[in-house]
Length: 468
Ligand code: ADP
Ligand code: F6P
Image 1 (cartoon, helix red, strand yellow):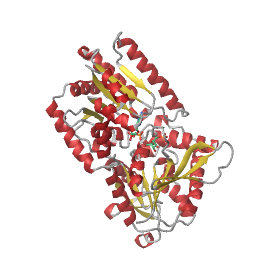
Image 2: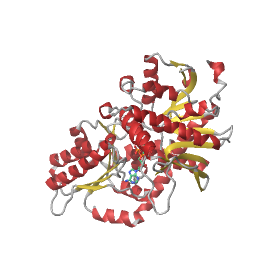
Image 3: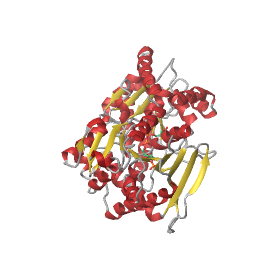
Image 4: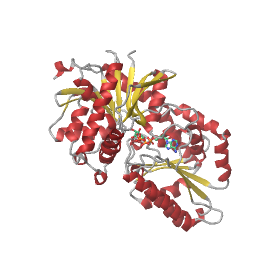
């Protein structure tokens, strides 16, 4: 079996006594690499200040070797805070109104990708398979190709891929697409994202569909496909079952005796629809006074990308909003919204999901949303909770037995909360079972194997020439 080299911006090196960072990419790849082993290269998360960074640092943990590099302050600012999180993230989440396009940030993005390629190249052996993750690193293959690297290189986009008119609003869209065309396999979360990609390129006359998922663009032939990311379903279910014995979960359980618990778990991000969700919950309470004092909503939202102005503003907005709702609706013995901005360890998270009668997952747009899948995996089969899921999360393509909602429709979400809380046991069990059966088969191992099988079977660089 070829050696696997994963490259991603964020590399969650496990640290004793510290909760794993929130984020679907970290959680899924940790699970995938743990079994197969390999090298995981990327940013250490640290800045080297003004200094050009020293050599790669390696840390070995089980079968995984982490190869980490620091970035300079300027790199972090232009590449990560700048182009990745103020241009690509909002645009790909259909928020062109929030995109702040700047040439300095764009050139920083390409410069850091070149830097990653220079650091990665000396680690490579000819038959290594390289798997690049997410929007931070789209130009990486192009930089590696310029250095003569002929290995198979795959790319997986963890976030949505918007339709042509949204994508084209980004001034450098063509360079981004050209970057994608340098891979041998380009994977998306859902068939919708794949259709948007193909549709945009064909419409603009810069791509042509071939057979078997192959695609031709920018003088290259590469494979495309939908590979819905998933979780370690069975392991997560086991965590949740064991979590009843966890001290923090016990505390949470005793604090909701006689109450129903509704849970929301998200990185603090405008794409997650948290303010809209709080509005819907408030509306639900106002429309259903019998629930006053009888339901608690726990929102666990670790801060994320705080240096980016839109995220900082959202932190303030959410704190104010939760405070206002609690002030207006709360009583001496009831807090309607419990709001936490900390990460919690995964076993505890699993236990909290299991305590909750309703999982509220209502992003305005999301590549997949692993929280939706974790909520299902964590349920008690004899008394499962109900998942309320945004139709604009990739997960909605699979979890069709959830209560699917439109997060822009506050009243609709409020009604769904009422319906979920009063849903009969038989209906809850039936809906849950269908989704759990699906997730037990389509777990993160399957995701990884499907992508890797396709990547190891695409023609290698050089063999493409015959196909052109
Ligand atoms: P994204 O990748 O956009 O953050 P996902 O829902 O796909 O969204 O993945 C989020 C991951 O981060 C999930 O595995 C979830 O359990 C984890 N996570 C989210 N919030 C927390 C938290 N407060 N503590 C620990 N893990 C969290
Ligand atoms: O899953 C999407 C994603 O953007 C990942 O690429 C990223 O690691 C995660 O969310 C968390 O974001 P960040 O790495 O910016 O904290």
